[in-house]
Image (cartoon, rainbow over all chains, first blue to last red; front, side):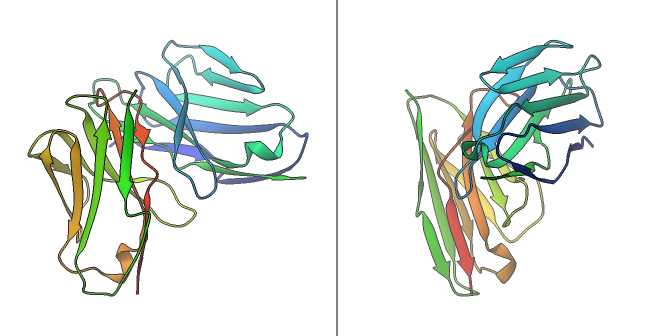
Length: 111
Length: 112
């Protein structure tokens, strides 16, 4: 079955440092979605990428979908304390009918 | 616009007691509905999903069951809670099974 792994599982950074989380699927994905869950909150959709090699930006966040559509990354430039939370990737296996969530990366930003 | 509601927000229940968590969605028709459980500091475990009234798919064998009595209502139940049922229960909806999921605020369940 499909597996979606994220690394690292945890990351502590000083405020102002950059942060990257990587998402790797065992199978080709038809799209990749990213969600953010603040501490004590629920996951909130951030963005979706569909095309091979696609790159999208949201202010300090840069999302990339791999050429083979099996991996993705989220990069945050100059982290702020508001970036704290757990970031999940999610994607449906090509031809499958369900969305599989990654294992998540918990980001802590030290002021 | 669409909104999703869950209640209660928190619940403390003794072992062996029954459970009923409710989720309702407004502003959309025939949504796909999901129940997830999240242990503290962990990822999302899909428990059940439903593509329509009375249609329930179970992802993992467990002590829980789900029902969808109405188009925009999804209920998670148990006849006898176990300690291991403690966690953060999240309901979500989507328009398609592979599309963006929108989560409710969740219910924190503590079984003692």
